[in-house]
Length: 186
Image (cartoon, rainbow, N blue to C red; front, side):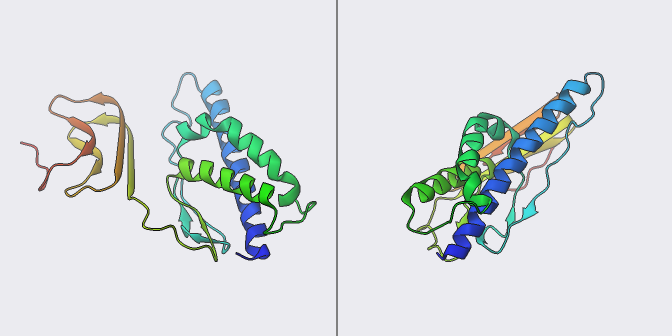
């Protein structure tokens, strides 16, 4: 990995951590001011493209807000540790072990939050990483069938989370459905 890629990678990780913390603060403010209505509820996070320094993924999926809350202290601490590098005050070098350790730690936290590995340009790909599938459904009402993840031939780690305020009679809400064939309701 080149110094340029590492420098851009440090900035990317730093900015992502800051954006996640800002969104968490905004969500908390919305919840605090929206006691009566559904303001801000169910607002889907959108995916966002990654910079050229990030080889994979080309687009970040939506962050898991539960994990952002869980890792808030780590995001704050590691982001603070990288501030002088991200702002250009301290030079980024590929031989600075302390810097590389902090970059790797923040990358791992962000990988958990986004549910996907982050690979910088020029880094060797991880050897055949296990498949991880995550699905989440957040809805007010289920009248038929809904599954966060449905797989016929599952491999790797599969997580499915469903939050439904109400499931109608005859409705079915499933986190992970590993059943074969098409799902039909009678």
